[in-house]
Length: 283
Ligand code: NDP
Image 1 (cartoon, rainbow, N blue to C red):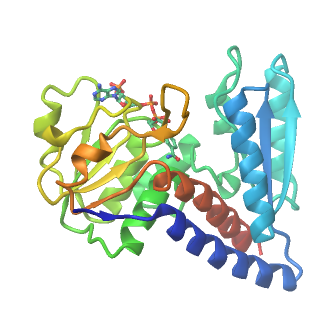
Image 2 (image 1 turned 120 degrees about the horizontal axis):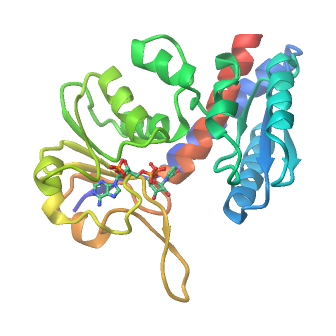
């Protein structure tokens, strides 16, 4: 039986640490404020932003949401990014993705000052991470590393296999594993023999966005399995499932993250952590 890595409990630990430090900063007259740019009414984005506002309130971080209709001109968003970069009251901010069609997300994200890029997704932040300069780490892979460390799982020297190569998860995950001295393999849709590559892993991270695709044939006996995927279950119960066939893989793994209650809560907690770090830097 695998140890179940409790992302909810670890995220709550991170949130209470953040809350304590936010209190200290505010007592010394420093502001901690997160701004969000939300364009259109994509239901998932609206929910994510609402959750992030709630998370901020819980730990004492101020938050502001800048809402725009989906036909907002790119220039208006670019002007807002400029003004948030310059506003001394704003500790950090991010643009909620995806943007509606017709808007250039990369151009906007590229304009975010790396000192305020709490999502860690700008090319400047990605480059800084790649060359080992201080930078904000994207929240999901940062959360995965924290889950492993806080569960006492050794990363250094081990074989880490990352399934997925997106800018949001896979690529920064690979960079963070390198930073932690793992030996890293990155797989994607053109990988020839996915089960063979995946089952080399001591630590396997599944971030492919394919519901329950990863089964026992991808997992070495005793591996640590981290499931980043989030999908709504088909049918009336509407619960969440991941990229991993949990029931099948769990008995083979030494530790595993569940969905829900694994990586998801950590992603949210790391945004708060990054916002606090941005406020500290300004202070
Ligand atoms: P993307 O769709 O951007 O990337 C998916 C990656 O998986 C791509 O690199 C793709 O390869 C690869 N891939 C897709 N199908 C296969 C396959 N059959 N075999 C091997 N590789 C495959 O997804 P994201 O990285 O944004 O997200 C991944 C998952 O994580 C999603 O389920 C998403 O909902 C979830 N997620 C969860 C978060 C959380 O907080 N828990 C946060 C962010 C995302 P290629 O590059 O060749 O196309």
